[in-house]
Length: 363
Ligand code: DAH
Image (cartoon, helix red, strand yellow):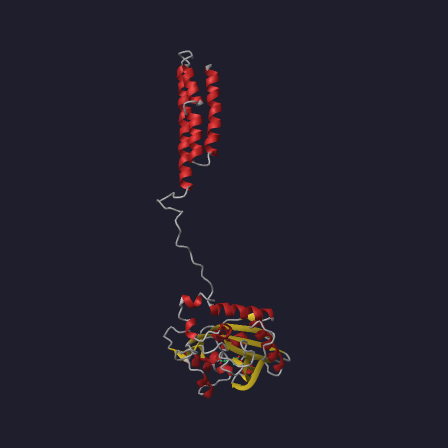
């Protein structure tokens, strides 16, 4: 073997060796490549043997070439070994990845949120938009503009939680005349229903209006199986030309059938009183469990009361500057927990707020 041949052997061997090292997919393959390209029968050894046959002045160059070859291939093998070790199970801080883990439990939306979204979908499908209002409300929106003047007995229908305003309360609560602003500053409250969103919507938008307003509401109630000081409602408001009670009834029937996924659901309207609607009605649907025969869910009446409804009172339109001669409207409101309780036969409203996962996980 001449010096030239020896050097060429090493150059060719190096290319092949680096390729084999890089291609080694596991420790065994890497060991084999190391044996092939650095071991007893490797080109490195063959060239080393051949050095003896070279002229004395050629030997150092050949020796250095073998050394460099061994160095580079050795480094490549070592680097590849670390790489494979990092990837293997059990790599890192002595973690055994073959052990069963603690798992990761997947959460889901709260039942009330699920119902809210479902209802929003139904109404969006009917052409409505979703509106929102603040949970801390002023007297004007929660009561006065809804045709419930101060000291009116209708206020006692809703036991209100008032909020004491500090010196840094809102300067301009945002509603009209001086006297109203004064009154508002004194009477801030946790909204007792979602009906104030009707007012806020009509104050900022011109008819025609088709909105639903879901959200949290509050009353000064003692917690029991059916009452909670915090609960959720959904409000619906339609304002357009020529709307009649037939539109109200038809809308409620369409939504109830979609909600309970049952085309045989019937609706019942009985005369009622709300200051912001005239005429007003209490709204009930035929019991989806017994279909009207009477069962525990409907207290053997065959009907389930959902909420209240009616045609928007002209005084409400006047309060927000909409001409009641030109525009008509209907509105209704109902409780979201109540819908969930009916749908799933839940008899305890407290379970919605206890945050006991054993309950929540079921839905
Ligand atoms: N705000 C009423 C309540 O909380 C429910 C209600 C009744 C809403 C009649 C309405 C309505 O929009 O027209 O009890």
